[in-house]
Amino acid sequence: MTAPHSSASKPILLKTERRAGFGALWGDILQRARVWGPWQLFWLALAVRIAAMTLLRYYHVRPQNDHFEFGWEMGRVARAVASGRGYADPFHGTTGPTAWVTPLYPLLMAAVFKVFGIYTAASAWVVLAINCVLNALLVPLIWATGERVFAQPVARWSAWIWALYPAAMQFAVKWFWEMSLTAALFQAALLLALIMRGVGSRPGDGPTWKRWLLFGLLWGALALSNPGVLPFLPACGVWILATKGREWWRDFPKAFAAGLVFLALVAPWAYRNWVTLHAELPMRSNFGAELYMANGPGATGIIMEDEHPNVDLKQYHLYVEMGEVAYARWRGQLAGAMIRKDVPRFLRLCLTRVYFFWSGVPNASDKPFNNLGRGINFAGASCAGLLGLALLLKRRRPAAGLLATAFLLIPLAYYIVSAAARFRHPLEPLIDLLAVYLFQQAELRWGLSVFGRKQLTETA
Image (cartoon, rainbow, N blue to C red; front, side):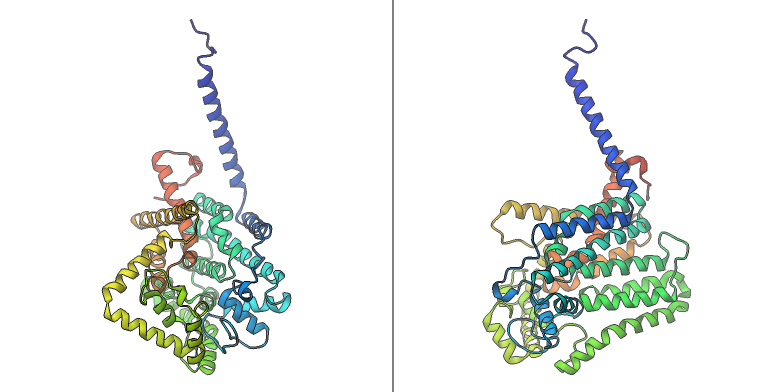
């Protein structure tokens, strides 16, 4: 007879013990994760971002090309404002007033330059630190959105992922651009819409005067940060008005007041462009130039940066000689002629950009394994998020149509002119939530225990 604890049974026992030990460890991690609230996670996320930005020295900007990588066009405009030349000079040298980029982020950078110096390491650290705060603020916003649309486990895990996942923080710790600002404003506006519509019913929800006015304020700030998200604004406003069904007209005065707040924020910028540039430019002047660089001769779906005025001296001199408005209009006319001449080619380029928007733009790096990992991460997140959205629509969950509209409308402008990872950033918090929702529902269906199945609430 074999003894109960013979050497033959030891491997099985050890394997069982290891599994039990891992299960206990994972259970302990889950339990600890449940103790943390959204604002505790905010401080963790902020600390991680500040530490990464500081220790990896992302605030040390290379001085080549007169610090152009410090904000590119936005940095140049910020320098002009801080130097007393006004909102001008987006490229090199003194080229005069500009509307190439919208003003919110450049003015923020200019304020930092005024206090900490133009293109200094201290200014770089402060600008990136502001980015980190804005990016970390998405943690409580994601949590609150997740609780209303999905369930608390989805909200919690989505917030944890955003707090610690490197891809979620890359634009905050490295880029001197508006992505973190736009994403935070957009998520706040979306959460406000959910509160006004009463999704996830909480006491006091509803479209009050105060909330409608805040809605107009947030969207005015979004327009001045990145007007690319504006196609979603009318759909969002109509969705809120539909709260009362046929009684929508009762809230129309509030919506009208929100529109006035929105106009009060964007009108001074449009008026300045009319007076200074002598052109009707509600937001930006560069669309024609971007359209040509996206669809001109030799276009492959990736914007041809070699023909950008900040790279090509010939284009820069044409920009200076013609003036910004005339130059952009001329390039737009050339692009329009090419599009009309070969519409199928334009449609193929648009489809290519659709693919790049969701799967990632090919990187010219000489590290193929890095590119492969980056591509798998980007495309995998897109697939999980879109499948989660499809499941949400199938189950007709509250706000499913609103989220689908955001995914439909926000990328439209980029399908026409450019596709890059940073343009998808306002949608990343929603992709995070929808991906976690997808895996949570798979766990419930298949009886897995990755997220702590006993704690999950079915959101059928």
